[in-house]
Length: 289
Ligand code: SF4
Image 1 (tube, rainbow, N blue to C red):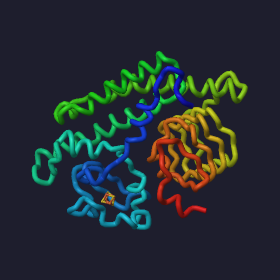
Image 2 (tube, rainbow, N blue to C red):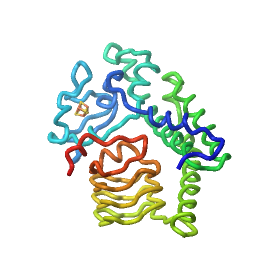
Image 3 (cartoon, helix red, strand yellow):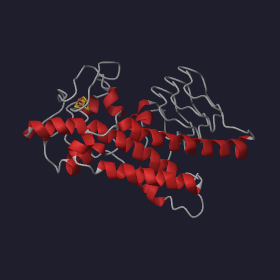
Image 4 (cartoon, helix red, strand yellow):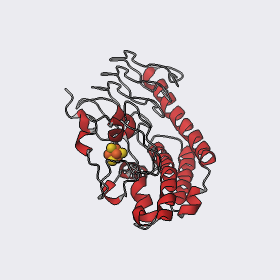
């Protein structure tokens, strides 16, 4: 699924690949700014703006090696895509929030907004790397530039952003991208007129081992603990799908669409699982058979 002839997808691919968290250049924002609600993924409650009790003075996690065994699986799943270091080093010019209460308050408000802008940039950059119509590519490119310019706003302007109206046109373009790619796949490969649609499906715990689900719309689907072992998931749209504890061992996700590192981190898989170019195998998969 590369872009159409004449469109250079290298830039968008590089943008998508480069969106990685760099905790060394952050001030533990995800461990401080965000609310943590006690659940099977987090062993305690923590209000927004209060540092986690495990956050050390050097912003490293005291229980980093034992997060899963100590009930903090959610921390191993989380991925800010690089929003943290941008807020810390660019929006706030490397100011440590610990020295200034006003900076701290603003930084903790900016971080979740930047996270959302980064999430949209990641999706748009990925969409631009697909074989889509030139018109759609141009519209995505325009959105990408808009989103990138918003990330450069100063803190007060970022806090004032109204995210839903920004998200709406992005979402429309992602839906169009998904439809173009999946319908083409349906016609050319599956011999169908339209791609399968199971948007929002409740497939919790469902046995889908070895199934051919190519080109399926699984937006917002509940795939918690589903058995997707050896399933063919190429061209599947996974935006917002819940893959917690899904079994992806041996599954082919090489051209799955709008899959995030967080979704992959929340699932189980192994060396045989094929991932899209911009995602990496989570460390906890290395011990899988
Ligand atoms: S447990 Fe560690 S990684 Fe999780 S929020 Fe606390 S300091 Fe951060």
